[in-house]
Length: 228
Image 1 (cartoon, one colour):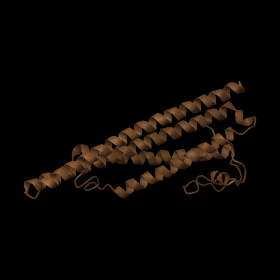
Image 2: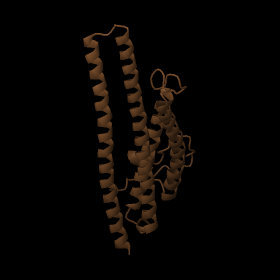
Image 3: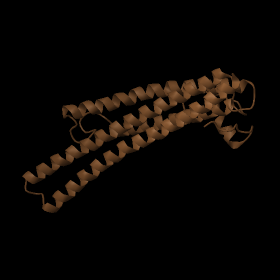
Image 4: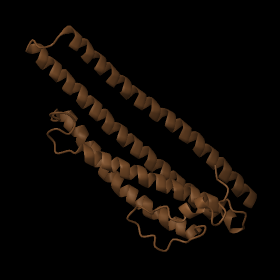
């Protein structure tokens, strides 16, 4: 749904005028009042390029983890013997989350420009471009969540295998007890439940996003019909 335009000088307007404040993108020319359409378009493209690059690196990390599991070379946990850094993975996640939030802010600002009561705001090409940026934002968000879920599932799987190996080793050495066994079984069941919850959460988010996209398309079609 397209929001109403912000009034010049309001706190939200000041934030929207500089949505890339913490990125490497140069925004020294940011306006002090409501940002213009062209300025927002430039910011959206810059953010999209940066997200694209970081998503590529993040996907490569997920593929590397998947190959390690497939070859059985994970060693001691997910990052044990492969030179993979859990901190680097978490850092990538935080960076991508921040960039996607900023792109969402820019796209919402573009929607506010389109929603302004002026003749230029009814331009069908602007509405088409806005929808294009929304589609890109949706695709990036979906890809990020999918990759993040894959890495988390790999970590859970690796932890589960490591737990099984430890249990077998303890059992063979005669150091395990019936209580330890049941606690281990409970831990494995909880890990399985977490993985199931993650898959269900992704499905719910996808359904909600599809509903939002449908509402957006209906709104834009209605505007274009009024223009024509």
